[in-house]
Every structure is written in C-alpha cells, then in structure tokens.
Length: 248
Image (cartoon, rainbow, N blue to C red; front, side, top):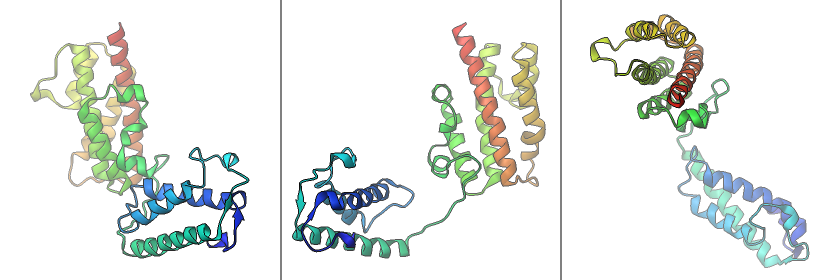
C-alpha cells in the first residue's frame, strides 16, 4: 500500500488497492491454519481502517467516486500497513509452520478440521457420532501422512456404520462375541441384505481390514487414500439403505 502516495487523491483511484489489501487481511484473520498472535491486533486495526473507506459488501462499484482521501489519511493508512508488514514478518519467521501436500481431491483444511464433509449433508446427519469422530481422525492422519493410522480409523468408522445397519436389518445389535466383519456379513447375507453392499464390504474385509490388523502390515499413502474412497462409498450405500428401510 506504499503506492498510495502522500497527496490528496480521489477514493476511486485507490479503491482497487484497498480492496485487495482488505481481502488479504480478511484471509489472514480468518485462517486458522496460520493463527496470528502478535500481529492480529494490527491486522484488525488496518482492516477496520480500510473499511471506513470501502463498502461492506465488497463491491467496488459501490465506492463513492467523489470522495477525496486527504494526504493525512493516506499517511495513516500507509503507517498502519507498514506496521502490519513488520509484525507479520517477525511473527512468521518464528512460527511453527509446515507445508502439507493435498491428498487426492480432498482439501487439506477439510481433511484436518472436518473430514466428514466428504459426505453429502443428508448422509452426515445420519452418521453415528463415533463414525464422524473416526472419519475426522482418519482425515487428520491422511493429511499428515500417517497412512496406516488413517486406514485404521477409516475401518473403525465403517464398522460403526455396519453395526448400525446390522441392527436395522436384523432387529438387534450384534453380540460382543461376534463383532467381526466376517460374522456381520454372514448374518446380513442370511437376512438377504443388499448383496451389492455386502460384496463391497467383503472386498474391504479381504483386501484391507484383516491385513491392517497385523502389526507388520503398513499402508502406503496411496493405499490409505484408496481405502478411504472405497469406505466412503460403502458408508453412503449403507446409510441410503437404512434411510430407505426407515421410509418403508
């Protein structure tokens, strides 16, 4: 914002610069991935100062083209901008910052903070609490490249949905002694549950669930990502079937 100058200017001449600066400030203030501590107050002060000149709706067309910004006001804006630059430079130099690659089509912030949004809203509302919790853990582990842990939480999340489906189809919760995927699948087959879903679960059980239980087996990041995608499809199919049975 140093290009604002030191002479009186029409607001319309500097509006675009102010809009861009305010946009960046809003991103910094709202971004929990880089939490500001030392510089937050200065950023908020500059944001509020700029907002005295710009409309709140962020539309540059709504700027008062006849308004003049005095040299004194421009110096105040420039001074506040320099303070922000100095404080942010100092703060980021000491920040514990890490770069995390995006995993597949999943947004990194989504994986870290609320991985359950990979499901449609209608599905999220029907997920057991423990499923949501495990999906969030799986997302964090995947984001920070802990693929075997991500696979473990993904399978836990899927199993809690399977138990819910089992209760709906069979009419009772599975007893503790038979809480394994093979037993679930055998009973669900006898009850003539959706064979397509059972086929997916059997595939997951053979390819991932049983191997992951062995301590000498580890997943690669690609395998964990693939497993998450398969389990996501299985969870959606199970929840949709439960919803259909509820409507019936």
